[in-house]
Image 1 (spheres, one colour):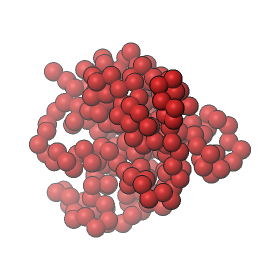
Image 2 (spheres, helix red, strand yellow):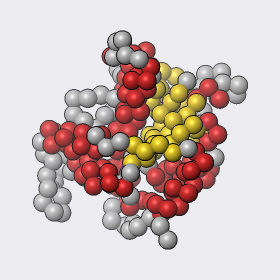
Image 3 (cartoon, one colour):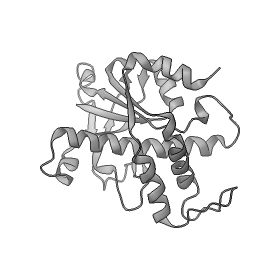
Length: 211
């Protein structure tokens, strides 16, 4: 089963260094997703799952920014880029009887982090849970925003951080209106993710980390 793992650049670097992606919620073509898009070809369904993962990557990027504040300048943590790993979860099957567990949107244990950041648009239909760590050799491709997308991704992160109920940001912007949050995230979503082979990721991360 192809799964789409939402990460940040720093999390991707940790996964590459450690040789695996930690168990937890990811995205895939689930029966619920097929039901939401009846009649769609598998390519379109996989794109929908990847798009959901990219939105979850935004959530994780916003959480990462919120946790560090302005303490870090430069390096991977300063880059506003979404990261999604495409991996084959079937490689887990020889070692684990149930490598994946499909969740439904109404399960109480479903983490909030997998809910879509766009108001009124849930991404929980594509959620599955990795029951074991995913080895890096299961990764078949890596999808990362290009440099030109960083302003839109940064704006979407700011919208999530300054969303409804939050005070205005330091430059006076306020995203009190859920529609503004949705528009900011959709602008980021309109940016295409670039495709990388797993063997290219180390070099990419090194370049993005800077000197």
